[in-house]
View: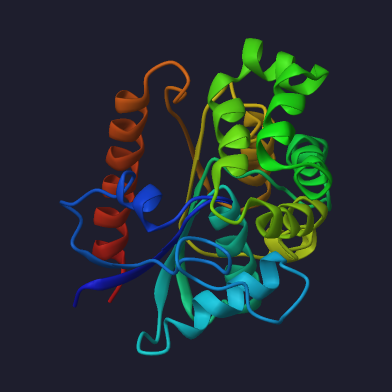
Length: 251
């Protein structure tokens, strides 16, 4: 039987981001839900825009699948971890690509996102983009993590950047809602993919989760900032290997 994989995108991303990291050779059905405020999905009336809200939306899309592998990139990884902790009877495997949270709310690596959210709420998008680029955080990211900087500046280019700033602020202030003791209790195959040269997704975060989830496998890949094509190739290869092994283990 073909295994189902719920593969969620990162903050500001969409199903195209997931497709770029998905191994087409995988014998699996991929389901991706564009989160509220992303692509063509409306913001809706519910607040705050936290991981639990986005996780419930994603879970609703899996109603036809009794069990599934939960996978995600960045924010999507947090959604997957939340689902694994809250619905262990349904999640049979876990894939965390460049996780940005471990257990704390509003970790330091979320500060650049919160900073951009404030600027977009206060200034027109082009002015917010210019002020962020010229500021201390923007200059530091230009030196240390240019791929992160490009993503942050891209928030100002969205059609409804001012409205999306609310999503940015809420997500940056939140957490996966998966406390350490619940993560320690997970008993499922887990793949964690990380890289360096990344200020928003520090490798230390991935290492913390890998040390906490029993039996988790940590794979390091080349950063997008150094070689985007190779990054995607290595991510897809790691996911394909994991899914192939998982399919053999799953009755």
